[in-house]
Image 1 (tube, rainbow, N blue to C red):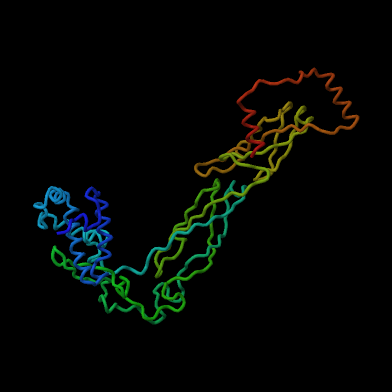
Image 2: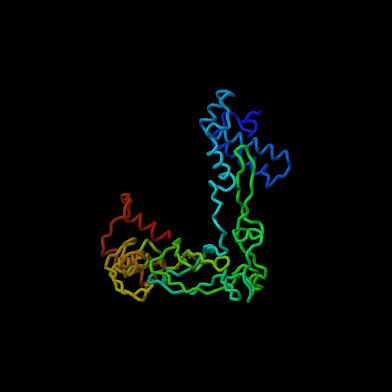
Length: 370
């Protein structure tokens, strides 16, 4: 008798997973339903017997110990029977008695990217999104049949959706079950398919979907819309639609969490004397007070003028970084006034300041590099 390891084409130190993989490969190649030759049938018996022995730890131990332990009746029959079904059907006989499968299946999920403006993020917005997807066929309403017709019970499997065959092995006659090739496991056939959808129960179409984009969303966030994806085959349940948000770049404002960031250019005289100005926020004009002596990189905070929080209540802040603008061209009179100011105000000599890893560095990175 041939060596069991040689029959399966594995080494004596092969793992259980390697033995099972080799058996599945050979069984699919030599199974009588696939290869009707007499030689293949004999090899299939040898492969099955070798796997029965080597897949059982106790039988394999006795086989490795010597030929006296190699008995086909060493208690491995039940395990071998289960593994035969596992090799062909992915689990111990799960294909038997399961009945015909339904034509109606759940549709696939869909992913769509939508762009929103930063000002739409502040309070949320409503959009109409165009989606090219599968919808229910209006001619057959998912039945897949031409109007006035209906599916017919399969003559081959009698409506069970499966064909059973007997396979002879050392374990005796083993009954295998496989999906019917005529009806593909449905148990019915459609002699007159719907002319609109060609028997699919669905067609491709473009439809408009209303979307309420909540306030506070950010780029990369996905909104799930249950049941708005593709309609399944034969009118099966629809999948879900996922909308991935992308917030467009804004020329004035940027975002830091729920806060809005902006840079305000302030003239030298306004920075010295202070002033009040009105700026255009994303949700309308807002008055901003500039205190006397404001410096570049100072931050003016306007409470509750940022983005509405996605989770929770309230809004973030609007943080305005000050950039004092020094004039580059002065008239003769303006220069005289500045010189008089310089003489009357004892300014310190320009000098290097002590390095600070603090507010200025953060503001510089935040407001001049976004």
